[in-house]
Length: 175
Image (cartoon, rainbow, N blue to C red; front, top):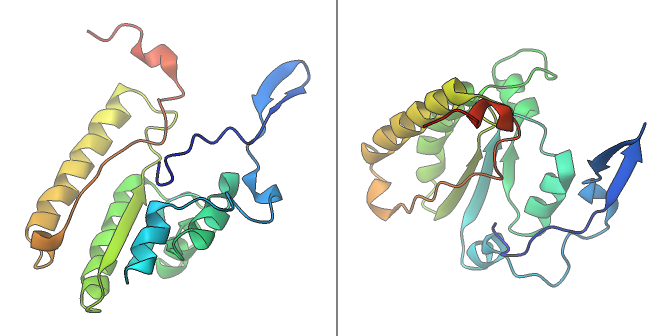
């Protein structure tokens, strides 16, 4: 999404007759060489870029992409769990990711340097209708919190999903 390029760099493989997508982007020495991404443009214009997520940033080469295209400061499950002083293997739920962002963002904004912030939610990835409702409410709560911050007047907010829900069966009977 931040490059405007569909990521079809990988292929399909089969394990025990089941097809799966091989999305191990970290096998590439440089992720999308020559691409000019939103992160690159922001960084070149003096922005400090941040990416928060409750899972491992290494998955699918996300960490490499963000470091190479925008020099993002990445706060993933390992760093969040370190801040919370608990097992670093534990997945961090979206509610806690939003809480960490609320703790960190006032510090980030005081730096007098423009910044960008990406937050990846995960609870809806394999979720159901209830998880969508919960994350929607958490997102609204986060937005309402943002509106009260001194830096809000200079803030642009873009909310996107990384792809459709992977648990399609839960959406068959939605009216």
